[in-house]
Amino acid sequence: MPDKDAGILLVEDDRVDVMTVQRALKKIDIRNPLYVARTGVEALEMLRGDGVPRIDPTPSLILLDLNLPKMGGVEFLKELRADPLLRTLQVIVLTSSNEPGDRAAAFKYEVDDYVVKPHSFSEFTNAISIILADWSV
Image 1 (cartoon, rainbow, N blue to C red):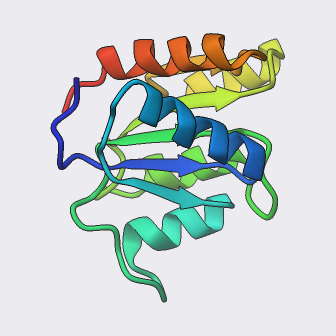
Image 2: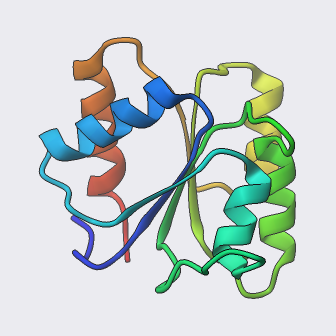
Image 3: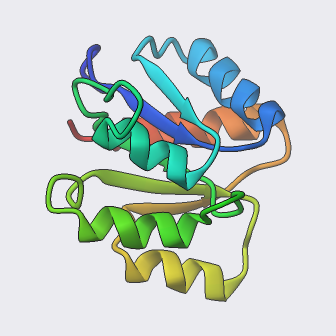
């Protein structure tokens, strides 16, 4: 399990999915700080401190949806991996897309894993639990 101070950045625009992640973390007793960005642009601002307070310490895990407004998940990954200070962050794609093209695009930018969001809460909680069991900080 992760260090209790290690933060998680959830990049997700769907309020229901944000609440589902929050409920899943609570159910499996993960108390790490959870930061939420609704767009890729907002996530980069939070990681860099561009016009908003920077997340400090930098989160050690990013859970990323691919279907985002303003800046999609793949574009976010491209920006993240081009930034020398952020390029090594662990990123797990957590998305509803099971399209081979989306998967290939994500792995092009060296994501740590690609998880298709399960439909039931128990399966979703199990997926989050598996993700965090492998989370190295």
